[in-house]
Image 1 (cartoon, rainbow, N blue to C red):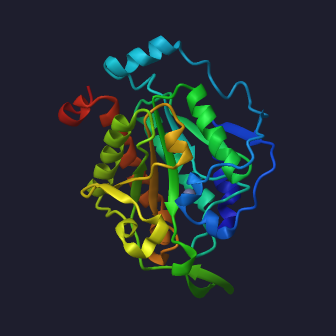
Image 2: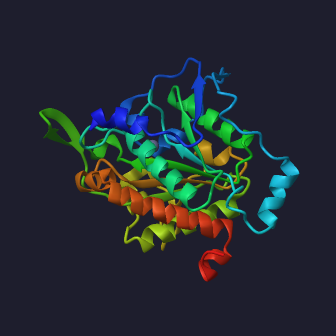
Length: 305
Ligand SMILES: [Zn+2]
């Protein structure tokens, strides 16, 4: 499935922002890359620079006052700017699935589907954020790009795994591989340190509610003692929204921000589901509905206006 890279990368990105980062970095173990706690790490090397950022990739943002008024006025989907952040980078690919496919591939594919769905629903200003470079600097580049764009909403797309001590061995395609079928499900994360925590929580609950409406269940393991330092506070037991204050992309962004772990790719059954275009379309549809409801709460009551 790694061979799919060329195909998926070949799909035209929707207003792709490609950020290249030139910096030294700490060496990340595979363990660090397996789990969203990775995002909480604060970079030791702050010597970052924004390089090779295509100036045409970022459209000039409307004046701040105009954009701020947007949230007060009725939402206009054509100008509502949601940034879909593709978790990890081609260089630092995040978790590895049970069948040895990089998380980045899953994130890119799903984020593309969500972007396409949002565009089809009239959200013409939806942006796909693809970042290059090593993991920790890339987190800060994502935040800088979203803040620079004065986005109205930020959604980071990821796929889940488990801490290394839960991994089991199997052989896939003649290669020693790892899996854990113990846990499954999506989860939604917010940070109390985001300056718009209330709105972040509202959007997170809408996303969780739409995932549930699609028949999906959320990952329960984050409340379990076995997770140790990966344990998280469950903020909404109906929708699967967890608190994760330290996540860089949630705490440093100035707009409402949410991270979606769409499903577990270390779980062998769920990995197959996450690979299916039908399942991706279903999640994309749920996310798009949540964005519409967030943008204009009346949508939920009246339908399209
Ligand atoms: Zn991830």
